Length: 366
Image 1: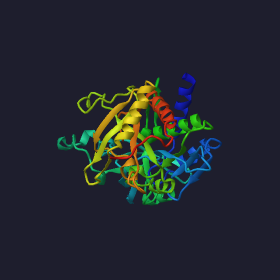
Image 2 (image 1 turned 120 degrees about the vertical axis):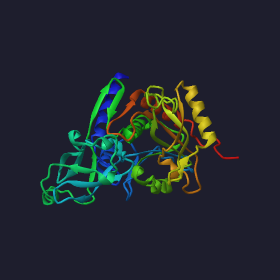
Image 3 (image 1 turned 45 degrees about the vertical axis):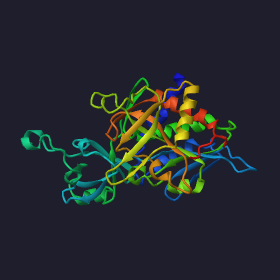
Image 4 (image 1 turned 60 degrees about the vertical axis):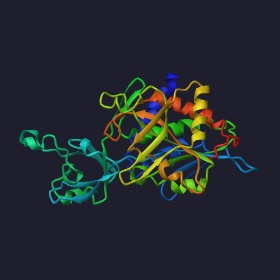
């Protein structure tokens, strides 16, 4: 067990070291394709970048198709202007919080190298008292990569449209991991581990594992994969907000180390009007399997959180879908935190579930 945990840490550190904001997921695409060689029966990458891996092809009959998916992309920034002085103006790419930006280390990959910079912050000694507690909107933010002029930045490979990401960071304390981009490289880790476990295992269903794109941008990057696979049911893997820190104790009972999560309700009412109310029979089935195998399962209800399930559930004729995940602290911040023991139990649950998806369980409504 300890050896497997060490391997999971190694894999996760490799995944989080890859810079891959929405629309620029190529490094993670290449990584997961390499990891899945000899594991999946068929690996496809569509025009948007979704990586689909078919496991356990069933021939000679209509297979019961199950799709499990997690997004590869991370949130970040994008350059929208280069000042004559060499400073970069930026816009948000995904839900990056302005409160996390001041003084943060950031990176850009250009001209075959990684460039390190920071988000500028007014020197404390000359900050007026009325500004000390003000969070700057992104329209007032600038990045400093040490360029002396606009031409110097252009010569380095920077331009309008260049993506900017949080600096790479990783450390752990036992099973507790701290890193950038755990949302949702942990989900990608779970998919890779699951694929290793069920290879050549004789599942009763045809399994499609999908690493999706652009979740942080518009939640719709996965739609071409859903349309092509046309699954009978689907499970998406993503973060659940841990509420065990001193500032969130009144928001719920989700804790690191408490086991995987099951989304009972997500909704984003600030314009998006998206979310997921999971199929009740699927929820009951999952809870039963978790109970049978003594896997703790944390139910979660959150406003303001969305996953890839929000719109993919509506594809084709509609499909039973549920969010499963892992508690995470400090979501969308430069460094997030998870407990890999929760992730290990999530993989256990997924594996047990797959052996029950033989097409005989009724998930119909009414």
